[in-house]
Amino acid sequence: MNNWTGSVLPSAVCRLLFVLLLLTAHCSLLTGGARAQQGVDKMVATVNAGVLQECREVCLITYSDLLWQLALQPNTPLDNPKSEDLNRALSLIIDQRLILQEAEKLPTLAPTDKEISDERDELVKEFPSQAEFQQRLLKVGLTSDKLAEILDQRERIEKYLDFRFRNFVVITQKEIADYYKDVYVPRLRSRAPGRIVPTLEEAHGDIEKILTEAKIESDTDAFLDSTRERAEIVMLNPV
Image 1 (cartoon, helix red, strand yellow):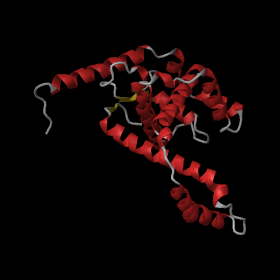
Image 2: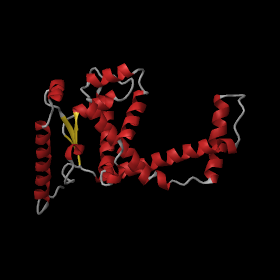
Image 3: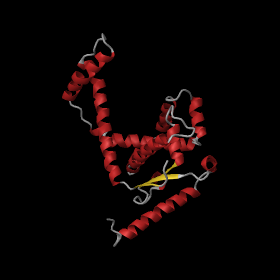
């Protein structure tokens, strides 16, 4: 049963007012391009909007944010996007915002212009051509400045995950040997019968990298599960 007495009610009211102020401010800041794209951009969710003192737009997720995410995913339809695609994008963006809110506490993680440019070049390579990439951006109203902002956020997220997890990953020689015997060799033989199997020494570097990335992914998932449980995520409009 909810407790609406004491300090709970004022706290809840303050958080609600904060969210409303954030949404009002967002509406007043919409650009002409965004209005042309979708009238008044639909607000989909907030992430810790009533918790963080200075969250700015990083707390608010709009319908445009979902479309921009889909546009940056190769082979994802943009015309009349499916609800499942939109919700998948929403879940991903919520995770990104949760990590970004932590990353912004460490200003030393700010990416350089070159890192952002390199990130853009790598992203373009995932699409059949530069022209198709630009066409997808144009279709959803994703400007070059906004793309640079998104790539800046992605770089901050990557740097934060490296700082928090990669630097502390330890892979033992036993783990590498076990993976070689139990996974690497059987998988290679099943996929390429008759092929000469690399020795443990030859495969050592590749296996270490695989196990490192797996541990980082596992640690990141655990971190996100814990962060989501503590976060104040408010769904404003279904998609």
